Length: 400
Image (cartoon, rainbow, N blue to C red; front, side, top):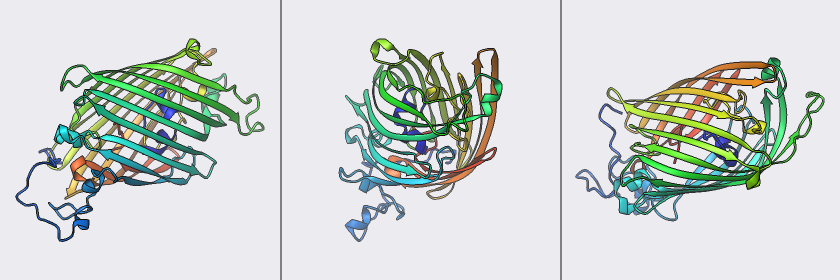
C-alpha cells in the first residue's frame, strides 16, 4: 500500500484508505498448502526449502512466513511527491489460520510495524494488527501511529484562486484506531462493523512570509465512531485475481465524545478483479468521499491515485476511478499497466469550484509467497508535473 497511507494510519482511518504503497483466463492456482503434489520434490537442504518453492524451484518465502518467527522485511523507499525522498523499514508478520484450510492462507492474520523519514522532515512510526476469530466471522483491526508530516495543502483561502495556492503546514499527530467487523452469516460476503478513531493533531504553519493571512491552527482532537458495511468476495486479500470488495462508511466526530469539532464524513469504496483472456486480469477501483462543514482542513477528502501527490487535490467532495491490467507473462512474473482520473468539488463563501486530474503508469510483480498469493513489485506513475515510484506489497489497492 502507498507509504503515506501506511504512515499516517490514523489520518487515513478517519475517512480514507489508500493508496504504501497488490492470469490466465483460468484463475491462477493459489495452491492449498495442505494438498499433496505429484511433482513435489524434496529439496536437498532443509534451509533451502524455506526460501525456494519445492514445486517450481523458484524463490518463495511462504514456508518462512508461515513460521511464527518469520516475517517479511519491507524496505521503505519513499518517493511520494508530497513529502519528498526518504526511507525506512517495516516488518510484516503473517499467521495463516491453518484450521480454515486454503482460506486461512488467502486471509491470514497480519501484523506489521515500521518507521520512516524523508528529506522534508516528515517522519513517523506505526504498528497494526488485523486478525480473524470464531471461524473467521469476527475480524478485528488495531493500529497506532505517531509522527510529523510536512505537507502542502490547497484550497484554504476564500476564492477560486486558492485551489491552486499551496500553504505548507507541519502536522504533528498521535493516535490509534480500533475496528470490529462481524460476518452476518457463515460464508456470507456481507459484514457489519464499527471503527473508532482517537487522534491528536497539532498543525503549525511553516512559512508565514509565503502564506500571508494564515497562522498556526488550533490543536485538534478527533474522537469519532464510524459505522461500516462491507462486502468481500475476493479470492485473496493480497493479490486478488477475481472478486469484489466494497466498503461503505459513515464517520461522526462529536464534541460530546471529546472531539474539538463536530463533523461527518462519508466514503464509498468499490473495487473488483476479473480474469479475462489467457494470462490477463482486469481490475478497477472507484472511490467517493464527502465531508461536512467543520471538517479540519487536513482531513478533507482528496484524490487518491498513483502518481498524484497526496492532498494536492482536496475538496468537500472527491471522487476517483482507476483501472489496472495485469498480465502474467512468465511463471511468477507479471506486468501491470494502470490509469485513473479524479475530480474534486469545493464550495466556499460565494464560490464553487472543481478540479480534475489524471494519472497513469506501469509496473511489474513477482509472486513472492505462493501459498499466500502474495506478489511484490514496483510501480512507476505519472500525473501532470509529477513522477513517482511505489514499492507495492500485494496490490496497489490493498485492504486486509
